[in-house]
Figure 1 (cartoon, one colour):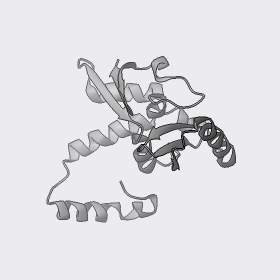
Figure 2 (cartoon, helix red, strand yellow):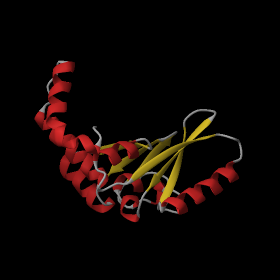
Figure 3 (cartoon, helix red, strand yellow):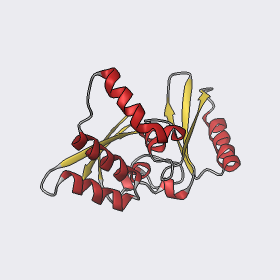
Length: 171
């Protein structure tokens, strides 16, 4: 992942990375990862179809997502997924935090947010910039305020959830 402003130099950066780490990127694996990440950044129904095509029709498959994947996907596809995050001190006043987040949403024109515990003293708020970002497959697989809960996702079956990790069976 590289910043958007460096995209024009991505081939030179990749060559340097390969040289530094002494490894070569397998073109087939890179293409598969791009298809996988593009599926997560696509609208939910389209993204699930793309994942199924990537996996093949006769294989059972699962996908594990984490709240921090939002930021990574936002860096990879800023035109498809507008993501911002900010850390806040954990004060024990959850109602105050919720009110602060509502103000943040309104001031920045964000569509929704979700929270991640960073430590006992800190919480991170991930915000999505618009409705299109909120409709991506990854966003639909995670819990966001004022959006359908992951258990209500109709394009994949929630199997398990632990901490910030969510496990789905791909139909």
